Image 1 (tube, rainbow, N blue to C red):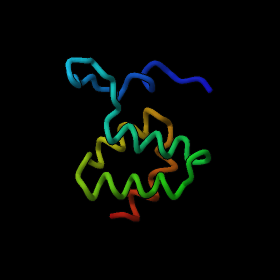
Image 2 (tube, rainbow, N blue to C red):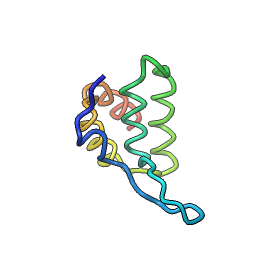
Image 3 (cartoon, one colour):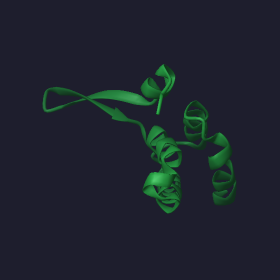
Image 4 (cartoon, helix red, strand yellow):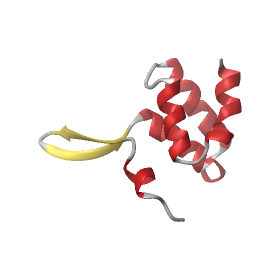
Length: 85
């Protein structure tokens, strides 16, 4: 599977843990990736990640939408975002 440069770098943040630089993905990027790999991890897990991310306010709908467009899963994630309301 090939990834675009934007897909690989968008939503990646560098944080420092005990003096070591570590790259982590944002909550919105993680949710979009869950939908991208839903066949491998299960669609139920992707839906739960979306619900959890919004309920706990880890990210906004706009952030998820932006990442879903970058990861090319906006058409897949749209009905779930609409149904969660």
